[in-house]
Length: 176
Image 1 (tube, one colour):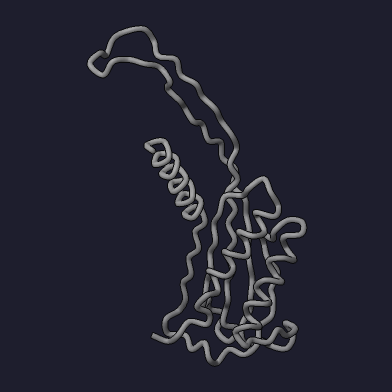
Image 2 (cartoon, rainbow, N blue to C red):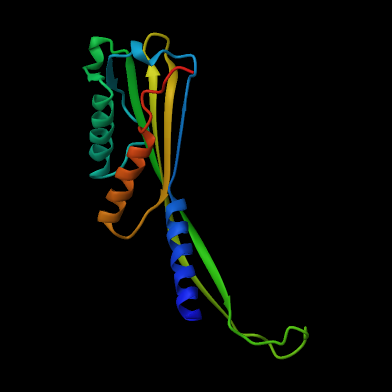
């Protein structure tokens, strides 16, 4: 029974850490009247996503903005909003150290305790979506999503879709 509780506890901790890995933040100009924005156009990203991801980002943002009753137009049509996104991946090495040796709690002395280390490269992805009021060139909304990339494209796509849902959950923001 104790083993079942320990196993259940480990599963809960792993699920909690997986849920906390993704972080989505949204900020906006509290004085902006989002009801006046009807159209938008894309501007070029200085840091676009690579490969298939660039189109996935744009398709997802287009779907979210369309659901919020905004219409995509050509940049020459003088849209109400300009949309730009930037994406990046930061790699860092994680080193984990394990100590499997036994040394009595009352003893600071004794034979050396064997240590085992393992390391791996973790990729942290960041996506930033900005909406800029075209009339005064001021940013009125920003969404930022951060997540650790998995080795599976399907899992990354699932996490991306979840992040986009979180990012645009309360869009357009209500005037406070």
